[in-house]
Image (tube, rainbow, N blue to C red; front, side, top):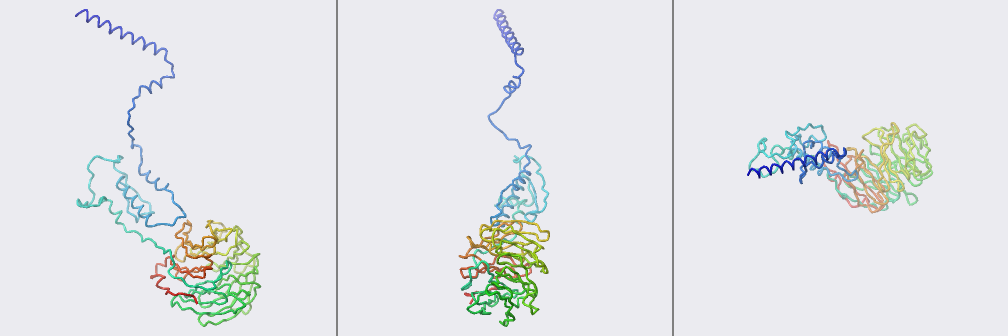
Length: 480
């Protein structure tokens, strides 16, 4: 036993001394650059990856996710769907992160969220009860978050895609440079058909023939006074007639143009008329003279005229692709714009912002441009994809309606200043050349070369008013 024990002890000393010699030689001859490799070799790895959320900020992640979500500016808005998504997002924040908010009513306001008590997303313990949770409730949403779903939502705006009324308008001309439809403040629609002017009452649906110019002349434009009692009629011969609509009586005829009168605009007792002779005439209907001043600036036919709501500036558009702004007493334009690439017929002053002017170009341009005439600065430009024939601002909302010709023949409601499409309406088979808005601002009427007038209920009324435009307008079949 003693020999065996001594032999085992001798072998163990040899093995220990041999290991130490090898290790000593290796440490003396090891290069310095291999220390990191040895450290990596000595590190231990497992076959599973367990993420750590200790440094994650889920509240910041939710905020970045909502900010970076892409949204299309040209897609029609869906307020009901947006509110549903907002409610779902707030519900997730409340249940997963413990972030509390005041509900959908606080949307758009600065909210202070309470951080969760623990950074762990999942906790293996019984959750504390908040409020009055019903043990027999079948809803997966607990009581502490039920107020997010019970918050009353804003009623979504529904815009009909079809006109609620269509009138036949025989011989309604398919001419881009004419203005043959206008809606008075007394709720009477005037329409020029060939050589006649017809009046259609929106209250009674009664059609009245106002005048007949004869076989040798045609109607080229109509325009109501602000009070809606008198109607100006422009003719192909270059004359302007003033008619009393209630008595169906012509009051006077004024000359001065050498070409057709395609556009007119009233400023109290001053009537401005634009013609194919490139001129604009200011006429004071209280004076015996046919006109009091002549404005010369356009080199081709004047096809668009609009006075601003403060009655201090007149915007004119022509077939020479020019847009000019005039003062009441100026004979030269105070502002000149030449950025349109086609005829400028569509002109509209905003009733919501002083000096905001919108203009639209023809087939080669297809753009709607916005300008501030107070400081003479361009604001925005949007390519609509088709000929812009008319523009009109909503009286109750900061929205603008445009009608189009080649090649889409559509009506578009835009939200300003984002210029996102609220809705797009189709139905006309020809260019939508004529546009007018009702006195209450709820209904628009469009006319086209397909010889139809279509009434659309697309704009909301004032908050003080009740009722709908469809109940105000009785049904009828034809304009004459």
